[in-house]
Amino acid sequence: MANILLSPKPLWQENGLAFLRIITGLLMAYHGLEVFDRAKMLPYMEWDIIKSLPAPETMMYIGKGMEFVTGVCLALGLFTRIAALFMAVVMLFICFKIGAGKFYYEDQHPFLFALLALVFFFTGPVKWSIDKRIFKK
Image (tube, rainbow, N blue to C red; front, side):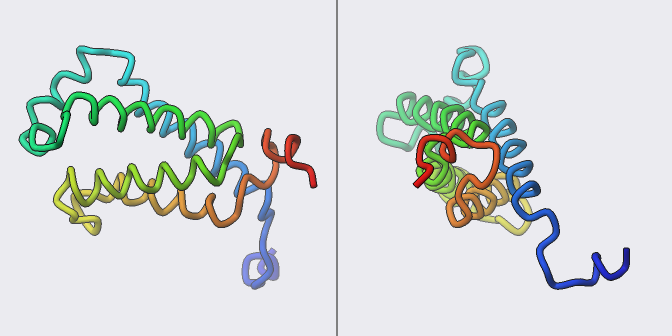
């Protein structure tokens, strides 16, 4: 067992990445579900930083909608790289524009989502994905 744990070779690489992609997608979709609940969306409109955006309510709904759509796409492995890229952009916008940019402390949550999204951008969907069935070649 020690040989496996100390080995530089990947350990269940495709299964592990697929599992992380699905869980990350489900968590992101869960956060994006707020887009369907006006009562949960209204408190965001009270934030000064949201009010300073052009078309603040529209931007807020686009952001939450992107969280939901990219999360679903990532969980299903559908258009994985495109979804991951959009997720990274949205999360970095949240971290650095909406938040204080303190990714090392206060804004870790969106920053970690952005990093995970970049992992899936670079690795693709790997196993258990619709992309793998559609784009076999």
